[in-house]
Image 1 (spheres, rainbow, N blue to C red):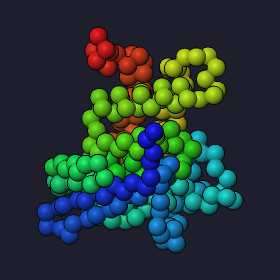
Image 2: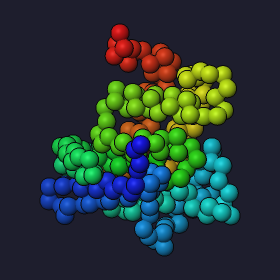
Image 3: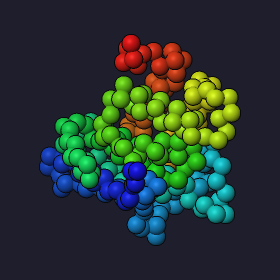
Length: 229
């Protein structure tokens, strides 16, 4: 039987003319992000600040938005960097090292997706199982395959799946509608504190991916059909 312990993904951004920026993401055995410095949580991460419409958290027990709280250090590190700045992004994990020459916003999109999935947001928690098998810089086709697979596994293991069907276009489209609302809410928060556009465009990239996945659902994942013919 496979078992999962703590896992660390270390992202490093090598930007010409700048000091190298490193950002570790430590996940516990449940693939939840372990934040080491909650004392530094900024005011813009407050739960009621640009609260996302689908949010079900109680501000008495959760004074901060879990996603905003956990991306705050990353936003601070990149708040003065232009999105299209060329760099080399490397992700070190226990299983492999992945490196890519790309724009800063693409590296940020990869790490933001990981942080948002593992922060404890009820909407984004849908993606948490993927964090255990994180794939940096995934293409649209890779993301579609992985998300469709985790959705069907979730349905398979759910005790509430009484209809016996592994695929419900209505359910998954409704979930992606909420995901886009969360992305938009986080984007509004970041706009309050960041002058440049690297982190903003990274979130826009994630939102565009959610829209593409919605279209894939409308075609019943036709783009992946060729794999099983």
